[in-house]
Image (tube, rainbow, N blue to C red; front, side):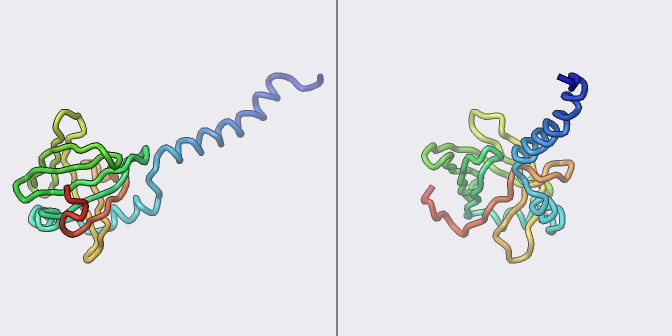
Length: 147
C-alpha cells in the first residue's frame, strides 16, 4: 500500500490526542472563567460565611450535571434535594474560616473556604489547595423550595 503502520500511527496520534483533550476538558466541567472568578473573589471569614448561608439556600450542579438544592437551617442542619426529587439531610458548621458539611450516610463530607464577591449571588467553595470544588453555586434568600 505504500503507507507504513508507523506513518499511520503517527497520523492518528494528533487526532487521538485532540480527542482526549476534548474529553478531559468536557469532564472537567469547570470553565477557566469560573476558576479565575473563584480565586479572585474575596474569601469570607467564618462570621461572614455564617451570616451568608444561615437561613438561606445554595443550589448548583455537580460536575456530572446532577442538580442539588440545600437549605441551611440556623440550628446547623441541612435540608437538601438531589436531582429534583430525592430528599436528604446533613449538618453544617463553620470551623475557623471554613464551611464544613457532613451528609448523612455519604462520603461527600468536607470543609471548604468560601469566596464570594460583594453583593453577588454566586458562591465558590474552594478546596484546601485553593482550587474550585465542583462548580460555582447560587445563593437564594430564605427557603424558596420549602425544604
